[in-house]
Structure formats: C-alpha cells, structure tokens
Length: 29
Image (tube, rainbow, N blue to C red):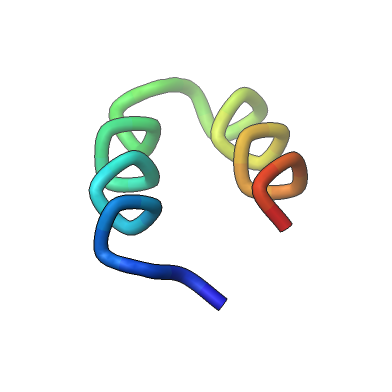
C-alpha cells in the first residue's frame, strides 16, 4: 500500500528508465 509520500517518490522515479523504476517499486513493496 502506498501513502502520499511514497506516491510522490514513485512519480519522481517515473522520469527514470523503466528498468530502474521497476527496481524502485519492488524495493518499496
């Protein structure tokens, strides 16, 4: 589950390559 703070971080990582974005999301999970 994502809170507002995590949601903001993911929006930032969306600017990064998909590969890096997936790693970030998996790590936060």
